[in-house]
Structure formats: C-alpha cells, structure tokens
Picture (cartoon, rainbow, N blue to C red):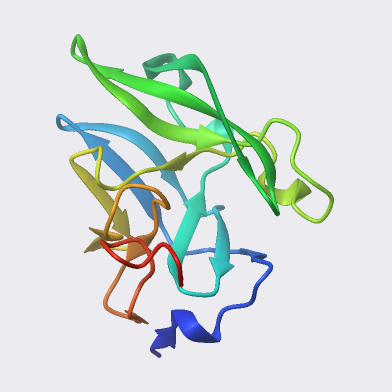
Length: 154
C-alpha cells in the first residue's frame, strides 16, 4: 500500500511500527528494532524513533546542541562514533517531549543522509531531500517532500 505524505496530519502523529528498522554505519549495526515509533507529519516522509535499548548507545556521544520543534519540544543531539570516525549530529532524541509525544521519549532518530545505510524491513531507505527533517523515504511513500531547495516555505 502506498502512502502520500500529504495525507499525514499536522500536528504530527506518533504510531507504533512493527517493521524491522536498522541503522548501519561502516559495516556496524548501530540500531536494530521491530519496536520503533513512526512519526508522521504532513509533507514529510516518516521519521523512525528507535527505543534506546535497541541502539548501541556506547557508539553515541551526547552533544550540547539543542533544537526546538513546535510540536514535540526540545531535541538533543548525539554524534555517532564508529571505528574512530565521528559523524556529527547523526541522531536526535526528545528527553522531555511535549504532551502527546511521550511515546518517543529518549527514542533515537537517525538522519539517513549521515549514516551509510538505513533499512525498513529489507529496503534501503533514501534520505529526505535537504538536511533538516531527517525523513526516511521508501518505495511505499510518495511526495513531493518538503525539505529540498525552495520548499521551506510550504
């Protein structure tokens, strides 16, 4: 079944996903779960939030960087370090999310553009255009997607 991002709600909705979600960098599996939370927001491909117990937390280095989402609250960021190489701001999470988003508390979301591979089931994900939203594009998701040049004002 195909989903259009223009059918997703605003404000975003969180839903449980039983699909297998994996993040791989430099040949190392960084995260692997069938218990992700999927956040759906109008004009954006889904973002998968992975429970912390399904992430190799020893590979993450907390940053002092924070951003604010008008819906989910204040996000914190982590660098990913694999085999001595760091990827800055590879993941983010909400330690104290806004009301309605408790299901993603401390779950980690990874930018597919900053790691080598992300998968939903066995399909390799394409990164959402641009580097702001971090959506995961799969064959069952249709756009156009916000995030590329000239789309910030949509």
